[in-house]
Each structure stands twice: as structure tokens, then as C-alpha cells.
Image (cartoon, rainbow, N blue to C red; front, side):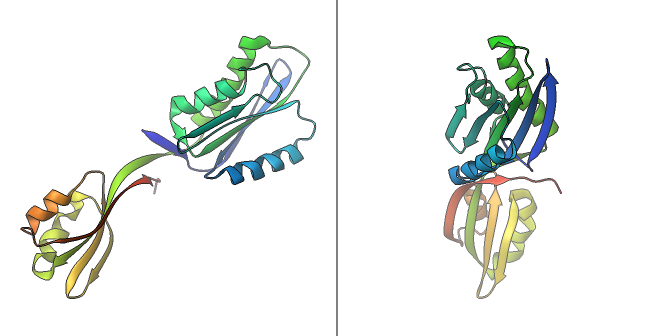
Length: 200
């Protein structure tokens, strides 16, 4: 299951006198990422490294920002993939404390920074749903409306000469709607969407 960060979060740890500040952001465009990074660099001008990893839809990218190749951005990305989080930017800001961690120590540190921050964060599941708009004769309105709790969720309804419904379901309910209305239904639109389920 794919998840999305509910809200931005920041955590901090100290390892061998180096301070690691982890910041996780909800992002949806590359422009957002660029703006956030400009602001972070402005807020931390004396940081030794500002390493990043982001996932937006199918796109992934990471940056070691001067750390030995593969010891920062990639471990951060692995932590994001392990939790299967999308639409997220992870930044780890390091202030070097004078004690080297070594390549393996750096990898563990950057991976743990992001992993621990994700464990502290609230993550919302993303569900792939079918989004349907239909028209139903009024004599079948009650039959369909009574079945909606079993079929999915009601997005919108409008009464006129016919009942117009917009529904969302984690399953394709076209056949079931056809059965309930004995084929007296008009399908106006049908598409698949990712929907973020938030806690109430």
C-alpha cells in the first residue's frame, strides 16, 4: 500500500558530535522542492551537508551533497521506499562534529534519520478507487441509495428527471449497479483515481 505524509515533520539526533536534522515535507511538484531547498539553505548557511531524497508519483531522485557517493541520498531513498511513501521530500541537514563516521556509519545514520522520522510521522494510505458518475431512473433511486453503503461512498447526488449520482469505490461496481437497475442506467463518466484516506 502506498502512503502520503499527513503533515510536515522535523526531528533531530546527535551522533558522535554531528547533529542530524531531518525534515519531511509533503510535495507534489519539482518547483515546490526547489523552493523548499532554497529556504532550507537560507536557514542553514553553515550546515556541512544538506542531503535529499524525494519521490513524486513515479519519479525518484536523491543527492549526497558532498558526502561520499551512495552514503546519504541513497540510504534516505531506501527508507522512503521501505515505507512506500509518495509525494514526499526528505532532507537531512548535517552539522559535522569532527568525528568521522565512516561510509557504513554514514549510510546507517542517514537511513535511520529518515526511517525514525517516518516512524514518528502520521502517514495516510493512498487507495486506488473507481470514480463513477451515473444517471438512474427515479423508480430505482431508493434501491440504489440503500445499497450505497455496501458499494462504496457517495460523492454527490442530484434529483431531477433522473437521479444523478457520483460514487467512489475500491472496486468496479458497474455490474452491480446494472443488476440493481435491471440495466436502466446511464454511465456518464468512469475513471480511476488515487484517493488519500485521512483520519477523522
